[in-house]
Length: 110
Image 1 (cartoon, rainbow, N blue to C red):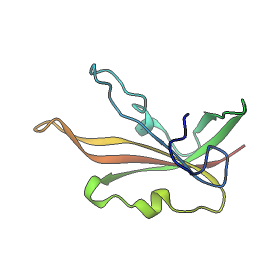
Image 2: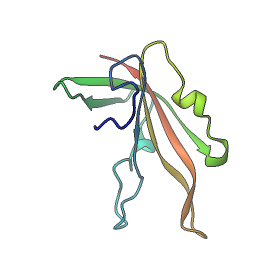
Image 3: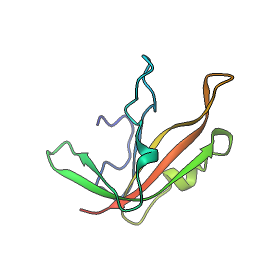
Image 4: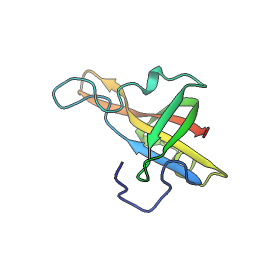
């Protein structure tokens, strides 16, 4: 993971955020094609720059319309290390666009 902006890295206090597309330009699955399949209690491993791995436990997933995206809920400060996976969702076949985002919320498990 390359950090583009100042913010929490996986395992640091605050919400580490990973963004990715649900589909690839060739029509196949994107880097974040699977978040809807995650259930509470599932774990997500994030490789860190120092060679360690941060493990997060999924709390929940939420779908939000892009025009009602709760930025403070997703990006706001947290008491401990947390993870957010954000991908596109709500495929509109008429336009070929995604009208929503899907966010997975996970807390640090070790």
